[in-house]
Length: 298
Image (cartoon, rainbow, N blue to C red; front, top):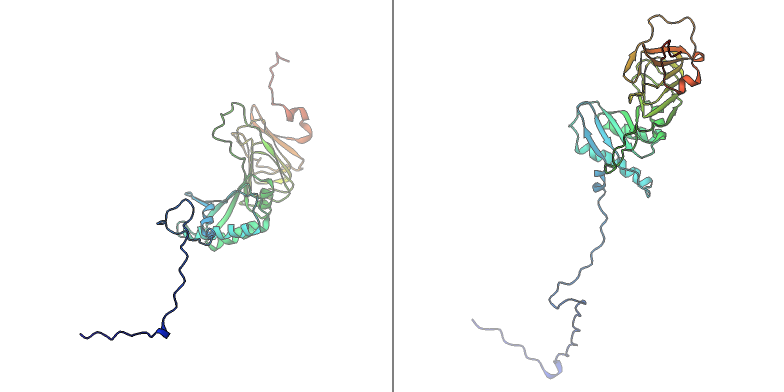
């Protein structure tokens, strides 16, 4: 095959010499054969990774949703991300629970108001779930939950596993004050004394490790001394309970209603649970355990 003729250059068409390129300086503490460093833009962690902070626990009769603990730097945007995280978790686990499964919400140390509880309830309804109970260690959240008509179980923060168990009985939590009407299907649980300004309707449950004081009519179930404290009392302006429980003792209201209602107190006697009018029970009797003496001791 004939090759193409070479192109000749005249003296006037000679090429100008090129300037030599400056050699690349290698980075410090590296050889010439090292891979050059490429700067990449900082990519923010995907929001989806934050959604794992919402934990779901499935039980035989309920679904437990545990929200992440409150961060000191949390803002309003973080609350919106938490709601998105809840939606994401529910979407990933859909069809793993029955329709209208009750939900026990555990916000841990978060303060939730009625508006936020309603937002969470709406999210659960979209997933065919029903918010039933709020288990919280914050009193303000408990009050908001009761006001919104949900059952409440106020819990204490669990002690560290490293701590040695104490022999003495744990102290009761501060009293829980509520100004509301406990409706049917609502349960209020607190590791201390519960004071309610309002009525407890039939079907409503009030469970306390300490005393129960109802500044209204008691028609539901009241369980004082739920941790076994036999010195607990149940007090109400009007006693018409479905059931009374103190520690492990159980009693029902009399079949025949009294003609006149007075403030009454239920307590444990050697014969079981007894009800007496409030003015017949002295302050000393309320604050000290009952002691039964024989005729010889008198």
